[in-house]
Length: 217
Image (cartoon, rainbow, N blue to C red; front, side, top):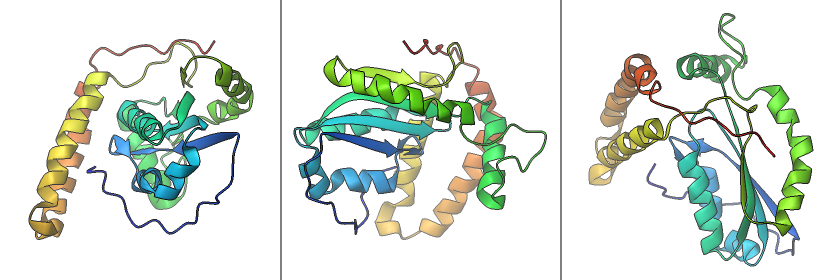
């Protein structure tokens, strides 16, 4: 949440690439620690300088902030983001969350038989084969941003994402105070809070007006 990179061990090949395709995902409405660490790496920053970059993001229900962070980091390193693709779970917030738990802890994408399959719909994943051509065309056009679920489906409201972002930042600051002195206890408090929010509060916040996804042209 605080965008503190971890130690990055992989070696970045010092090659010249025509195009860089960067795949990533958000954690708690921000870039995940691995991709944040990659973008902070001097070797990777040198690699993207002067290059065109296509961003491919997968997420459950929040994606705006992490996509903005990735685009900003690439541009700060001297790269050009020519297009971005966002694949996301289109199921209802609470149902998709419990489906995700079944997948994470039991390894079964439909552990709860009455709930939808966890993760991104395979038909949307298969669309990537077609959208690759669209990405190549975007290299010679202005920046284009694609949200991948079928035309007309809804995605989480901006208000919902901003609410989560503000709360998570406060918790992250609280948990890491005093050099993480009370980390375990404060993480327990955070866990209790987030379970309460997800079950009793998030369903109502998620009912705020939502913007519809335009068809991919």
